[in-house]
Amino acid sequence: MPAEVRIRVDGVEVSVPAGCSVAAALCHAGRSATRQALDGAPRAACCGMGICFECRVRIDGVERLGCLTRIADGMEIGCDA
Amino acid sequence: MRELRTEILVIGAGPAGIAAAVSAERAGARALLVDMQAEPGGQVWRGQWNKPTNSQSRRWIAALRQSPVECRYGLRLVDFAAPGLAVFDSPDGPLRVRCERLIVATGARERLLPFPGWTLPGVFGAGGLQVLVKNGWPVAGKRVVVAGSGPLLLAAASSLRAAGAQVLRVAEQAAATDLARFATRLARHPAKLAQAAALRLRLAGVPYRCNAWVERADGDEQLRSVRLRIGRYSERLDCDALAVGFGLVPNIEIAQLLGCTLADGAVVVDEHQHSSVAGIFFAGEACGIGGVDQALIQGEIAGRAAAGSARLSFGLRRARTRSEHFARSLNHHFALRDELRQLAAADTVLCRCENVCYGAAQACRSQRDARLQTRLGMGHCQGRICGTAGAFLFGWDAATPRPPLAPVPLSCFTASPTEENPQESP
Image 1 (cartoon, chains in turn orange, blue):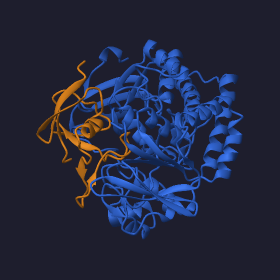
Image 2 (spheres, chains in turn green, brown):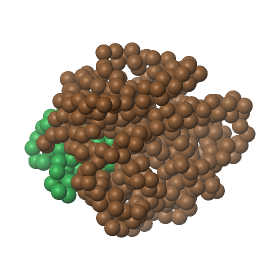
Image 3 (cartoon, one colour):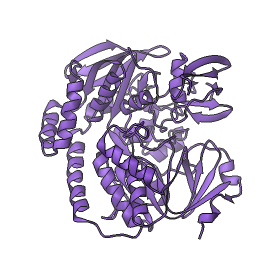
Image 4 (spheres, chains in turn blue, red):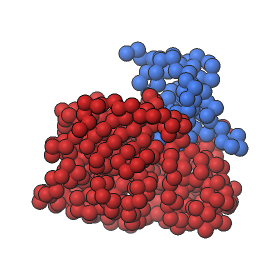
């Protein structure tokens, strides 16, 4: 297994460690906020275990929780869920 | 839609669910074990599937590997289309499972409470950050404050430090006198005492404060600092992350959905872990917070009972009584203080999904009332965070969830079933 995988975050290609969660990968990619609240405030992963839904992102077009999804090579992630 | 059949469906593959599924198979039943995460272990045995680090997890994970239990991961329960017909969502699309009996072992979640700044990126649950780090979240070199309440804080601080974080403080809201009494109780449980002592040793050099809690978090696009209240003093700490959780609460949505009797926010079960609804068993934290030992014992009992082997050994009975005593002292000594109800300001967000503020929620009589008046609890998390906080802040009863239990594609309800394991059907 390669130590790094290539993914695209909002259209920008980045390398992140293989084997981590999508939420962790986004942090590695330098994204502190991964969605906006209704008032535009930045939000990011919080509970880490699929309860709060704050880390939701679009993965290959489908809304998923970043904390419950493992990163995979070639994933297209959109921070607008 | 794909459809599976099984005799016993076990939802949740943490310690209780693993013990239940393995014990059910040993007692001669067919079991299907499902979990919403990518691999078994739940929260407490996260990452141990390929690398068990203690004798308990080693034993049970090996037992599961050798057992004929069928396992499916990445499955999130959406609804019961009929009694004994569970509907799940998964990355591969929806899946239905027909079962004769059900064991629910969905564990617990952290209680998160609102304070100014708690929605900033960089503010996590205490167990939450621990879990994120186990899944690769980069924390090395970062300044972290750990706060809230309960023994989980020590475990979280220890594993954050092991991952390279600089843990600035551990702030426990309980009073020093209560902690001293808890430590005395711990002496009756040598294994747990040793565990606690080892944790404290690994945290040597990290200031641990009792009577201490976070008053506010500040930052712009992300957390920059926190203000701690320590008795009569307050202290500002610049930091990169705050891990804050106020104990655990049972995940009871499935029990509510199925109409099982609840008491004090936990599922009521008999001595065979059977709920008030025929054929539905519960094991582990859903029946009340008690830790991994209790979860394993209850899982074993539930698995055997669901397989029709109702006789309880003397050893299991004794182990259960002992673990229950420990659980009671845990809940008693880490009771949450009143000051925590005063942290949120009127304009502090309470419902993170629908951005409903504390002030608006405070004016409502119940969680249901708040739903109708303000949309509180009607967003993605369905009130799992704000409803739990509201129970502590305002004394609200948990509102009954409505299916679907999580946002899912419409195909979960519309697709017609195709049987996936017909060779196993009777």
